Length: 234
Image (cartoon, rainbow, N blue to C red; front, side, top):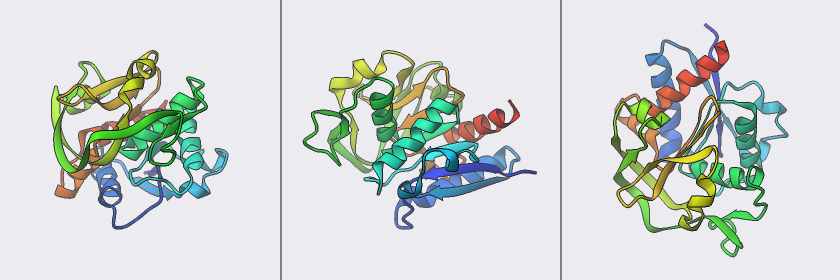
């Protein structure tokens, strides 16, 4: 059986909980689907113009930012979005998927992240009113969304480790078109996004991969791996 190849966009750090969890989550999901899987970390400062991404059947933008090379991470996310490669971005990956879309789809060349450009004119990603560092929280899924289908539920409790999220000032502008919010917290703040017309393009501010550390198969990760398998057979 040919292993499914998944590229992990990020700068691996063994001390980061999400970096510990992601490979386990992928292996649990693959095993549940009866599929071999090979995951490979792609350091952001080594990501080229796209040729080095062509061998991967799925791409995951991992947490732990700032990335060593933000442009490298954005280049990989754009590749996944434009080439129809199944994609998931969690925490920092969610944030950078929004920036990539704002810059390259909406034409906002000055879209920035407050962590790396705090004085930026258009901070699409801004500090959260309340930091979500090592906390659990309920998220509600938009009916019919990929998240709702993956979890087969209306809501779930998920873990976070983040201090930044979508700037509410840009929620409406970013959500007009194929990119839309697919999960919110109890206050209605964006906690996940999805891209219509794409085989699988999902970003979450929460970290579903953490469930793997207790031996659970994260539903969203299983849905991501299944989408990559389906694309292989398409």
